[in-house]
Image (cartoon, rainbow, N blue to C red):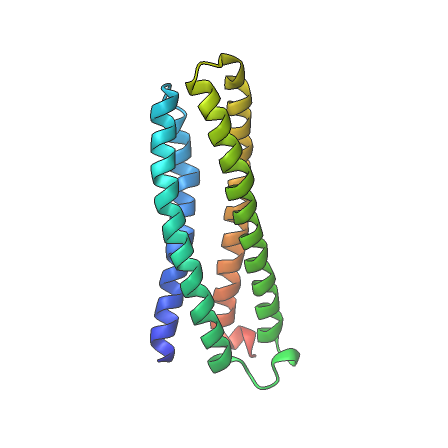
Amino acid sequence: METISLILHVSAAALLFGPQVLMFFALTPATWFIDDEQLKRNVVSTVARRFGIMSAASILVLAITGIYQIQVFAPSDLIETTWGSILVVKMIAFVVLMILLMIHTTYFSKKIRMLSDEVINGDEDKVGDLDYLRRQSWLFSFLMLLVTTGTLWLGIALGNHQFSLG
């Protein structure tokens, strides 16, 4: 069961990390070439919705398998080991990532959708505001990508028992 849990955990991490890289480095920059606001919004909304579903499923699997792995792999002297310290930092990074995801979803996505509606409805004065907010969202996505990368690296460090338990 430990191997299955680990396989699921690593797969879920890959499903959370990989699409973030794709969204940041490929999809978002590709949308900069779409001039039609309605088309741009439809493309981004479709991809973001599917990414959100996949991310939510990944986070659920990560939480379940992570709790299981702590119960199975944690050393008895958890507090006094490097493994325990890495685990605490990883959990803090994971919570920070969840907060950043909520901020991005509740603030940036909603505000961009609102400004996009105004531009689609003919308010050309909002185009600059919308472009600025999209750039801010993209930069915020980079912060989320950094936190995800750090969390992934911490997970790898936990799995290297020569390092984390040595």
